[in-house]
Image (cartoon, rainbow, N blue to C red; front, side, top):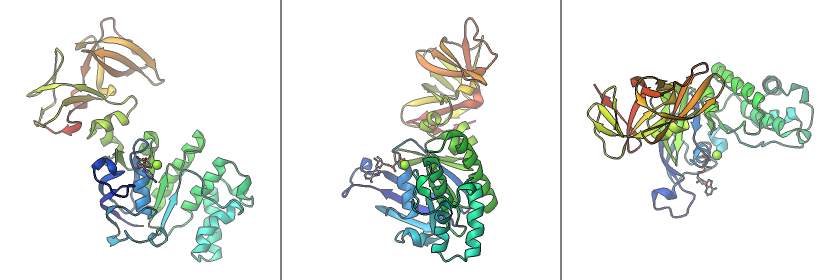
Length: 355
Ligand code: ADP
Ligand code: MG
């Protein structure tokens, strides 16, 4: 397994890129620690696959360097980098049996047949395909084929890293959950360096120790699920993570106070002065609905099972609040913001608050 340094990597699919927007990856500079379980999370088109393919060697970056354990591998092929990659859609040999599909990457590396057999059986159990071992892959369902693909990624234990590109897209929801838990267990057991690409926050937050959030060709935040929830570095992270996402409201600052329309909101500290439009971010979980605070008009209450989401209008802005499943909306509803949940943003980036 390896530590992977992505050094000032930029990538454009155009022959003569000039402006920033010509680059699918604007500039990525990050270290994936040896043995870490990472998720690359972001909306479609933000550059996740591009970054993954640069790590595996399917794509040569326009600028920058890639190091495995300190060694420059930028010009090495995928084989030489010794990476396992699992793609969004099955990559398997239709005419081979399920067993041989899994044995192939090992036999290719001249692993002794007894070890091949042991590893293949272990992997078949994990992906729950032992009963189909002798079947030709051709006749299987899309779901089963993708499990073979996943197995082919997991069967080798000598790889530098295992990369997954939205591997569970075609898998049904229950099996998704099972496979994700197995990947997590596998990581705990063997401490592989794993990078898992997804646009689904639940997948990212349950799989990874550290989540790398990408937006428009850049990494906007790297953190534990709790850090991303409590202290989104960029308003995009606030919206994208959480359900519903963070409320972001335009405010004017006056020392320790944020002014929202005619309301004055006491802040937990004094934000450092920064240029750009200022916004206050507060997650719906930190908006308290009751009889005290700022008057709101409630437009909708959604019952989502364990809690309710209240949609309301505060000073002409839409906000969401989360209340308990047995809580009621009072006759003259008001909201308070829990100070611990308040973040201030200037030009979309989080501003530190002093005492
Ligand atoms: P993601 O995996 O996050 O959906 P991609 O890395 O596939 O994003 O794409 C990032 C950007 O690069 C997108 O704007 C996409 O249209 C563009 N792109 C991806 N692959 C190619 C390609 N082969 N040729 C040209 N543009 C591409
Ligand atoms: Mg992709």
